[in-house]
Image (cartoon, rainbow, N blue to C red; front, side, top):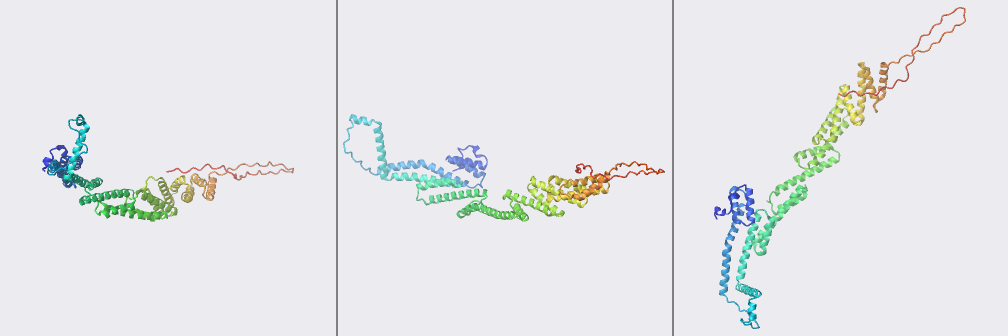
Length: 482
């Protein structure tokens, strides 16, 4: 049938648009059994997208339906002619006589019955029954019903094949099942029905496997996929999904090993196992992997600082590990706080090594303000030494007021060794504030009765001892921060 004749009932606007739009329009006509319109759309789709799969199969199905549609009127007329000829050629069996004689036609009662609608209906039913008996006896009824049944079976098979082509396996199984009920001995229909059921099962297993993969239940997903391969090794991308699931199972095993090492407290080994896993599969359990790595780097940094002592290299490694933790979670307050204190502690050590006591005091004051017991109290001990050394430096440069203040800073901190600072504080304080001598009362000399008067000496005043108690020192003031 020419394509231009098929397109007579289809508007030109329906033949425009993308391949997907044409496919959707064609299927809409197909479902409404508008075979001419559906065929015109599918012909246009074949010219627009010749590489699209399934179009030729749809065109074949539509052509079959068009042929059946064209055949139906002639077939019905032929069946009627066959019934008539067979009725004439075969004698009709006589109808058994009634036991009682029928009333005469001119009887008023018979006339009334003939005019009754019920009588008319009974007469028509009787004639219909006689016709059915005649058709059955002559075999025409079986031929008529068989032809109609065969036409119905063929339509169901064609529709089922079309449903298979578009992937509607449930509909295909339903149609083939109905056809098999009409033709239970047809091996062809049995084959189609089994195929539809097989694809039904495959589609269900494939959908289940997708859900298991999304939930990261790899063992169950692999079981579903392997069942698909056992039925049809070429079904869709099942083989690729099997490889994907197996790779995820391997990653799961590696992650479980890393978690066991992490739980044992081996932070270095944890990072050695998880770093390549994260790089190879960044989408694999990203939250769990990142959190485990963050905590491992954090603990490495803290532990390195605790064991660093005076080693600047270990302090630098600790800061580097804390930086790696912050690279994972940049806003984590605990990591930020530890990183800041570690950097101040390293600065204090560098300044102390260079005898830059003001800078050392500045860094250690910030540590004491944030965490007085930092590094198990070593930071406080360093601050006491830095205050004392700074006081000595001021003393050497004759800046006695500043020196006095540093010694008093040492005395104000609990946990410092106050003995040396107290001696130096007393010494500088005596220099700055020497004791003032107080006058003492002298005796008035008395005359002795002698012949001659002897001059008496007036004793000179002597300095008094300094007071045993001095006014309390003022509250120590911290050095100004830079």
